[in-house]
Length: 349
Image 1 (cartoon, rainbow, N blue to C red):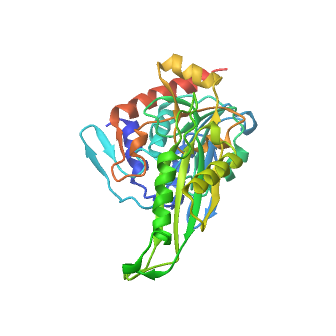
Image 2 (cartoon, helix red, strand yellow):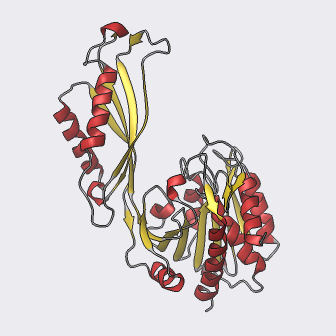
């Protein structure tokens, strides 16, 4: 087992589901401090922490690798090998990318100045980690680690969450009518899913809608309550890059549905980002013969709009947030080779 795989397995052995990044941060701090990195740990409370490490003059940063350490809280704590894959929470999204990076700098005899490793907490919820780290990262070239299946992604879709409440008649379940809150909710969900947010984008393609959660009724199922709630998320293209565009589309759908008693609120929102002239992306695609793409999901790219950034990492993004996140061992080796050459190429001056 090579060093990159050893480090990947070690990183994945830390349970960071829903937080608890501090033990992993202390481990990373120890490994990097031993080989001359300067480090700074940012604690966020509740055993949560982020870390930034650098070589050379802190004020002369050039290249940053950024990866989040937390994993969504609702997955099982599994850890096994299947064929040529390592399977564990974070094996796709996304702390596994730290493993090859640690292996590269550990085996490198003379690490060039200007390298920054920035690993953040809480990307899956409130982004407290990258918000705290961002002011310390001045490197103009940033590789944001997310699962892209080794493609170089030059942008990420916008992201919106809409919370909806329907109002109707409270009644015995046997006397339910189409005007009750759950019926309105179901009809609106179908309307949004089948007819909403259809405008396409030549770069980002179609928007993607995910119905996330809804609640109504009582545990005993003996009556229909007068309100029902659900929220949905939109991985949207540039046609919906303003709150006004989201509001206009929601108002249209509700008006066409013809029901009164429907309220909604945009509770989370960010625009799409696109970096088509990325010199870093062009270098990576030519140097390593990699394909380009667009990342459909939330990531830290929104924090680096003013930099030359790419989104890049191991793993199939379709496996994110599941109980079968698996990283191919061959991609661990490929990543190590890419990171090593990037450090030597881009920091040689």
